Image 1 (tube, rainbow, N blue to C red):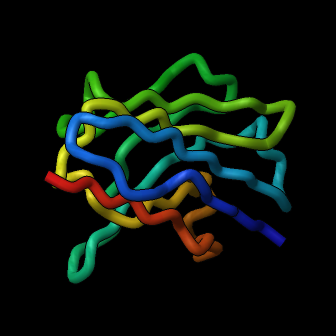
Image 2: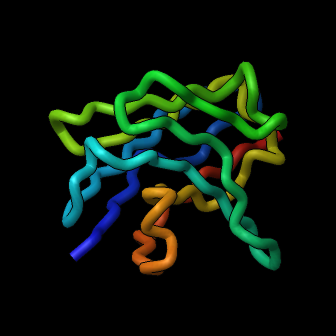
Length: 117
């Protein structure tokens, strides 16, 4: 079945960096646009960044542009989110998913990023 396993989160000071990883399985990873999402308590999950199947096109929400970089390794069925210049408002649980598989509701456990001021 479709599965996502996120890792790489942790506690970091404002201005620091983290690299998140997303290991995917159960579907043709190299054929799907992948997105990184984040969620804080009481708020809806927010789409933060996307990358097309071949990796040529990326998009970012305005609040992370210039600070976050999404990438992927199709040979390893893995996506990444490099986060730099982190701010306290980036604190959230981060998830990945394939944009066209969202309706399957196959979310991973996420990885918690905490940015201290």
